[in-house]
Image 1 (cartoon, rainbow, N blue to C red):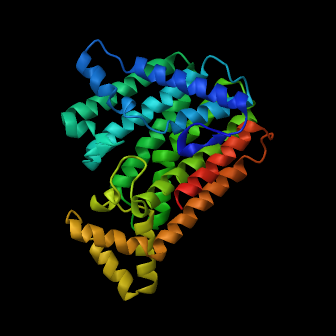
Image 2 (tube, rainbow, N blue to C red):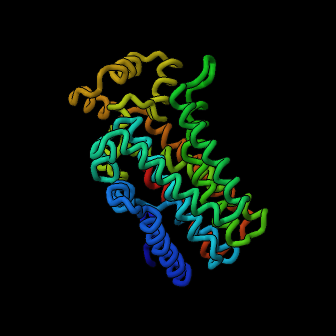
Length: 336
């Protein structure tokens, strides 16, 4: 048994492992090439998060999805570079919006160079992704444009908040479908599409990616509360400190409104206070870690991961399908 990709995904087929590793190595080279500029400062800023590492979750999904067609087709590696560049660009922008200080264990670009440089660097990465995309054909451009529209819409909906009468949990899950699910779905779609897989297979893998992407983000929500050392390099409780209501907090508020228990209402009041205070922040984390809302958020994560697994049922059995199934298990494992 060997290990490749995020979460220690184990690949038991040597040929598949070798091909995936080779593909990810080519993607890494493509990322470094795509982030080069004639201006050294732009190169430094654009490669800041590339060199900081990362799970390369989306490129891995491109590689695995390509196994259902011709895995050596010429568009596979470039499309993987496109989705990762797009993802990286959103991180630069997200860190500005969230005023984040750390990303992947290093100082965020906005902390190091200021908000203007961080935003413009994200724009630079989008431009480079578009340049690569143009060589992949009009259908690839259309697919990416639709996904990017959904991604931005999800971000706007998150900023605007739910409309009056809308269930906050449903609203949040819609936000995640746009912000995270859309690009993960495109990763699977590109892999299958570029490999020449049958359209039915492309659709199956797209649905799988959509659900897996939401499960992946929900697992991050749980980890932000439950973990002592967050895999993304962010400090535990970062979302809490910034006042971002992720699923565990939304489940708490839902329960407080439904049952009216004094301890739930008190915890909601604490979460609404100034959590930049270290003592309050630590107390909020401690109470949330022991609260049933965290267990409910875990169950929500498992539900989406199981839906992703179920979506794979029409695909033929084999090493690639087994690896995709194992990714569902790995996401659930991350959430505890």
